Length: 473
Image 1 (cartoon, one colour):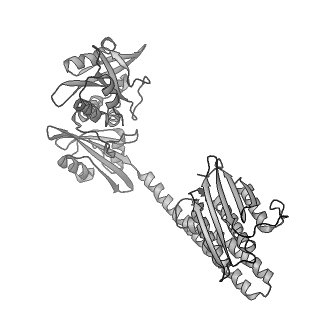
Image 2: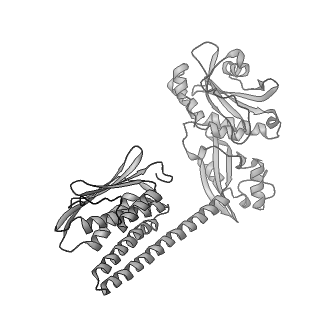
Image 3: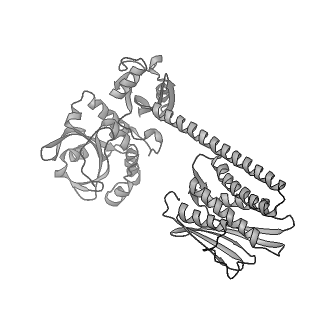
């Protein structure tokens, strides 16, 4: 939307009510430009004698028009724009030609803009290539666009007045309900609907599918509806042009969204299938975890029990990620939410019944693609397991905390406990521990981050992930 108000307040003598009129016009300037296949420019008086300022300018989406750049806010003088100046001073519409550049001529039609009292407060010009101006229905399109601008009452932010595209069908219906214009796209659409010639038909004919237009004309309100006819899906817009309380014509816009709807349906099906796959993967992982738990209960070796329990927790942490993916459309995961679930899951599976463990969680929202989220889930699982297994030897209570923070250039994830800490001769970077090897490999290879562990009133593990990693939001 182009808003003229700021320029008008700075360089014109117009009153607020008059500026509001120009703002009303500018609110639908894009639609008028597309309808007329013309560049539309709005001029207003400045405080200086015999000078004008360009307060709005729009280039059409429906046709090529040579445009001089950066003209918004430009001051022009009467000799530079004689047609515009003549309409500004006389209030009479003028049609003529102007030379944009040496040897390049444009068709130019200029109309006055009046306030509620009938005073001329500005001028609207429609400029079109000479080739476009020679087309049979060009003048009808320009006059309809001008009427639309002249009769708009308030600034419109409604999607009903959105701009057109080159692939939209356009119809114009007169006050009697007769179709007096159809562009080639509209003709093609109606041929598919078995209507050979739409121009000359009336909106009351059943084949025309014009119930919406009848409603717009009678209610004098712009309307829009999606209709399915045959194998086509159309979005139909009807915009009545009201003058002195009478609908003098109606602009009908047809957009063929058949392929778009087909693709949307395909995407919905694909999304549902992907979610179902994640759900089944989650169920399969939980089945595997259950089988490992059963095996752990049958073995008498404490070492085997511990190894199987670690495997159960690793599988369960991946299952958590697939559980999230099965409940949403996007392939992205909030690491903070996953971490909460893993923390609860590991504690539930590993903690002795008589151990009093407090948890502390402070996490900002950090979104990762599912692949990186799965790696982080395993890492967080290993570190929490490590705290429970080694951090509280000889104690009956303790604290495990998780902090997730967004830094200017990176994300920081910290897992800490208030346990006994690491032995003085223990080096996590060179340790042969399977869990720490898994952590280092996943952090460095999968997410391109760094990892360190150190004593700090217990053990603290710190993961730094650069924000420049592709896919991290």
